[in-house]
Image 1 (cartoon, rainbow, N blue to C red):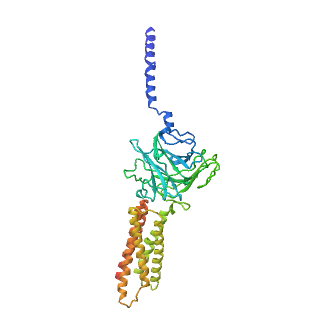
Image 2 (tube, rainbow, N blue to C red):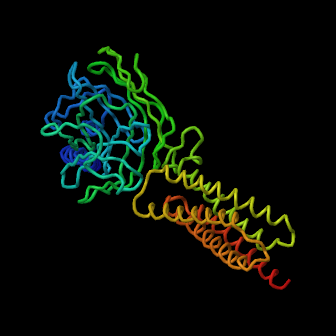
Image 3 (cartoon, one colour):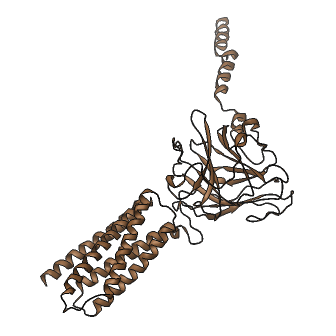
Length: 441
């Protein structure tokens, strides 16, 4: 019995947990757990004060704050530097994804034509903030160190700092700011090079701010969400609600009024270039593309086929040919006008426009040739036919090729090029079959 009791005591002693190793293990595990304080410091909200200290070269207290772009967690703070002053302070806060952030001021509400401030921080911790004029949709059409913003210089020049996994872009500008605002975020891990040109933005949004009289009060976060990826017109996505706030450019003169921020985001895949009112499909860029396809890519080739294969149906073929060519040329000219409204003359886009102008000139020459058509009995009719046929064929070939070129420049989904390519292929097969039938008969 004594042996059983001693054995039981020995077993109990072996199974009793030792407190010291357990405490050491708990300390090691807790050291690897995320600290709630550090997680909170990485966040930003309008309910928290902006504590950047001397990192920003001006006073940031008392600024209006609202969530400008909820899906990207953009927070904008702004207000007058002092009562009665015409100097405005802005601080844009956004997560640091390894790209740039920017805020611009637009006279029309569109990205093109805006003047913006963009900033980024390199992996080595060096920050850079510069003004850009957004003259088009390509990188080269947005030159650095240009724009219409009267930014402060010297010690108060635009700056960007990284703190708590967020970027803070701070700048001051003289004069009353425009109230139509555009925001953009650059692609992750892609920063401007030595020439300062910005990579194409990963997303964009547009909205408005409301300016109160003197120093600004509090602001409310904007509602709604969404990303923009490439176009510059916006669709209304939501608005922040403030007391007694006013719209574009109005100054209430009341220091106690609260600011208001309204946000419009461009729809996904329209990037895109704007879709106000009519939806993403009717953006300016896509209107240009649809008109070009219908005019130069469908109606004009159909008019050529009518004249080539239906001359037995006289005079139907002639009037059908003139109607198809005339309507196609009108629609094609509208496409060219819509293309010039895109305000982008850089590099390949300039070549695309030049080809379009050549096609329009070819269509005009065909119309003038119709007015000068000699009778069938004259010897000059042979040379006229040669001129009319070959100039028309060259214009059609250039028009179709330019459509494919434009689709590639527009960065549209490949399905668009595939669909039109299938149409051109079917049209070519039918054309060859009818040509063989015409040769035999």
